Length: 219
Image (cartoon, rainbow, N blue to C red; front, side, top):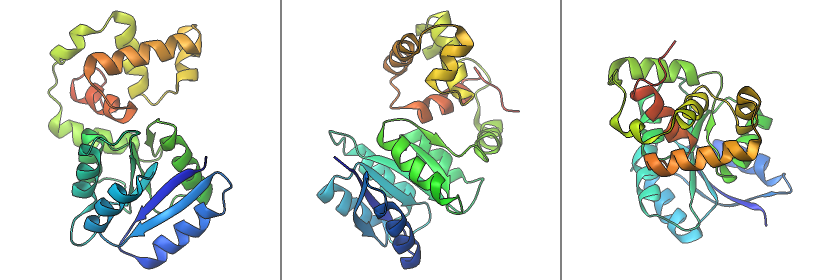
């Protein structure tokens, strides 16, 4: 089955351009679009796409509020939200990651990066644009981090804390496995336990928690 996508952006040219690019992929099907946040929410509920490409700044309802409404609906299977932004430092994006969005991508990213992003997010992984993630996390967490370890981290074993730290540093499961000299399946088991113990939706939320709790420091 192809990955189904809903595109939400107030600029018609952006919707058409992204739509044409994604529709040209054999494994992706664009099933709808929306010109504002309210329409995005109603269309997401009606169409149940695998992925919503959500512009941060839109009229009627902004992308953050629309993402919150979609993610709070608790669809099964889940509807993943990938935020789109023109700005590389944007508190809206940070909030979106905190509430459960699967990541963010700059609108001027190369075409192949957009296609890859949709596939990654549809697969249940987080997508944090590598060119801006460090600056985004550092900028926001300097102002918001508690600087003390979260009590929730006490539920993790030392190895699970280590895995969480490596997730926060942007490593994939395969890279973590190589770093810890264990099998990738073992890493997947650790990641699953971390998410369960900390009540995390995905890797994006894991990154935010790790920085906020002080487990990983910006820089």
